[in-house]
Image 1 (cartoon, rainbow, N blue to C red):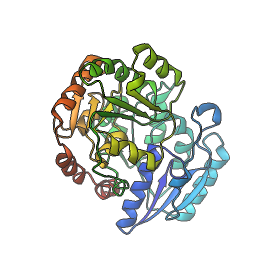
Image 2 (cartoon, rainbow, N blue to C red):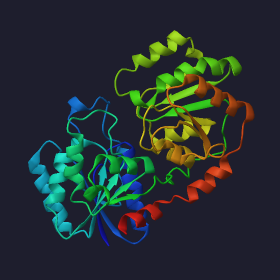
Image 3 (cartoon, helix red, strand yellow):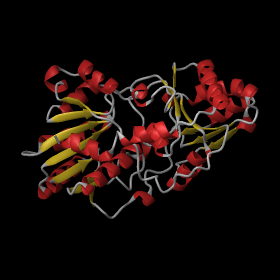
Image 4 (cartoon, one colour):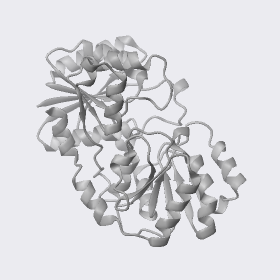
Length: 361
């Protein structure tokens, strides 16, 4: 089968791009032909607060990569339609995660015929507020044959926000665990090292984790928190809070985009990955953590709870609650449970090939 993937793909960095690459590799392993229909530019620099949009190390030559689309230039929408029609895919899978792309994606999908359209919805409600978000969702989702969400919480949102003739297309999928890190994983785990990993935005609750740390330090003076990820905004918000709390000696900050070798180093050094999110649909950070056999401590918000088996692959706590977070961390450090076998069994149940087949049905 000829499959088109529309949305971010390498060399663009980030979780959506990495997800698309893993999905494409699953289709390749299943014997299908896959081509990316990717961005030439994803965001204007004015809207992108990070230091760069590309990771050339994530630029595989194993797939044809049509980099034609610029979301704010309609002539590139037409060129993307033209390229897709030349390819003649039987199915097009659209990575949906932000209303910003709706005008371009909606135009493209409305100019395709005789092609099954599947929306892969990483979320329904954006973390940032968007004017006209519901209308954007309808514009993109209406032409779809099927809409696959990655958590039940997101599927429920789909049913709440959109009319039945659209929401009835919704199907529950899942976020597989990454297998590209298998060669990096080791058993060199160190005690009392916590990890906060990934792009840092206000909704991810790093401030809550920092506020919880003094209580943890009282019980474990040698505890270390590694913060690894690029800050969208001002990193001074966090460095000033660290200084105010007097925890400088227990926090190791890496406020930049984290490459694969660094990812493996940080995960292989950590005993617990903490996700103190204030809101969420689901999280690729949990999938990455499980790939390294690292348990997670997550806020019970959105779809996060669907990916954590309490006491076996990790823990859940109420959101925005430093005391509950500290208590759970202390409990883990005191008891030092071995969750590796449960995590390994969990990852085997949620494969990329399984998701790939679900999207094609």
